[in-house]
Length: 433
Ligand code: ARG
Image 1: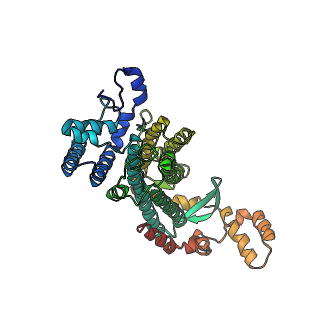
Image 2 (image 1 turned 90 degrees about the horizontal axis):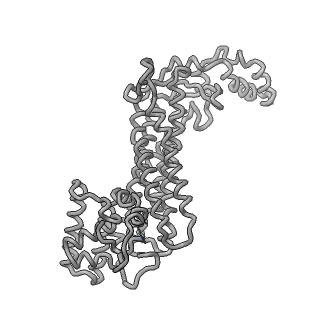
Image 3 (image 1 turned 135 degrees about the vertical axis):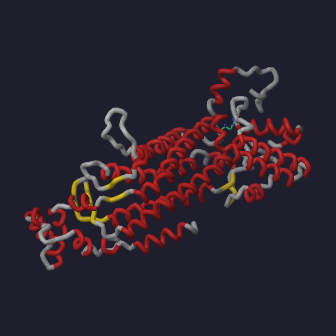
C-alpha cells in the first residue's frame, strides 16, 4: 500500500488491522471517484482564490485531475488496495506528478468533508435518475390509461373478485403512484443538493475558504451551513435518498405482484413478450416471468440498505468511522433499484391484455354493488338495498354488461371520469421540478 496520509514515523502499520480498517472501502470509492475528482478541482480553485495556491499550481492541479479522470475512465488508472481510499489515491497521484502542488491540495480539507461532497454529488445524479424513470413509467401508464380506458378488467379486494373495473383505472392508479414517486425523488434531490465541502473535519478551519465558489462550481443549489450538521447529516441524507428510491421500488413491487398474478394461467389476463420470460432446466413446458419476480425482489435490497444505515446512525455527533459503512449500502441499494426501474417503462409498454379472459372473470356477483347503489338512488335506504342485493347477488349481473357498469361509474377519478387531464397536468409539472 502507498504511504498512509496519516502515518506516524516509527509506528509500524499492521497489515491485518489495516485490511480490516479499509475493508472494501477503496473498491467502493471507485463508484464516486469521478465526483471526488470534480470536488477536488473545485477545492483547488477555491484555494487559489484565497492565495494558498498560485495560478500555475492551480493549472497543474487541474490538468492532472483531468488526466486522472481520463485515465480512470479508460481503465488506465485502477483504484485498488494500493491506496487506503480514493481520497488518498488522488493526493498520491497529484503529489507524484506535481510535487508540492499535490502536497498542498488537502489544505483546509478533511476526508470527512471530501467523502460527504462526493456522496452528495453522486446521490444527486441517482435521484435525478429515479425521478426521470418514475416520470417515464407514469408516461406509459397515462398513455395506456387513455388508450385502454374502456377495456373491462375485474377489480379485486383481498385477491377476491370485487367489482367491475377497467384497464384505464388500473393504469391511472399506477400513473398517479409514479407521479408521487417522481415528486418524492425531486424533493429529496433538493434536500441533498447542498455543499458540505469546506466544513473540514466537522468544525470549520482557520482559513477563509471560498465556499461560495465551490458551491457554484459544483452546481449545488446552496451551501450546507453548519459544519457540525454536515457530519450529523451523513447517513441521514443517504437514508432520505433510499426512502425516495424505496417509494418507487415499493410501487414496483406491487405492480410486479399484479403482473405475476395476471400472467398466471389461473388469471391469464396478461401476456408478456417472450424476452421477459425464461425457461426451466427440467420442465420443457415452462415460461417463467423471472423479470417481474426479480423486479419484485428489488425492494428488499433497498429496504435492507435503509435499515443498515439506520442502524449505523446510533452515534454521538461528530465523525465516526462507522459512517464509512453507509457507502456499500447506498451503492448496493441504488444499483439494484435503478437496474429494475430502468426496465419497467418498456415492460409496461409491451405487455398485452387478453380481453376475453378478463371479461370471463367478471361474474354476476360483481354487479351487486351497482344494484345496491341504484336502489339507494331510487330512495331505498342503502343498508336495506345492500341486503336485498346480497340476497340476489347471483342474479345481479342479469341484463348488465361491464361497459354499462363502467359508464355509470361517474364519481371523479372513476371509470367514466378518469380525470386523466388532472394527472397529465401534474405529470407536466414534473418536467419543471
Ligand atoms: N473512508 C472514510 C469514510 O467513508 C473517509 C473518511 C475518513 N476519515 C477519517 N477520519 N478516518 O468515512
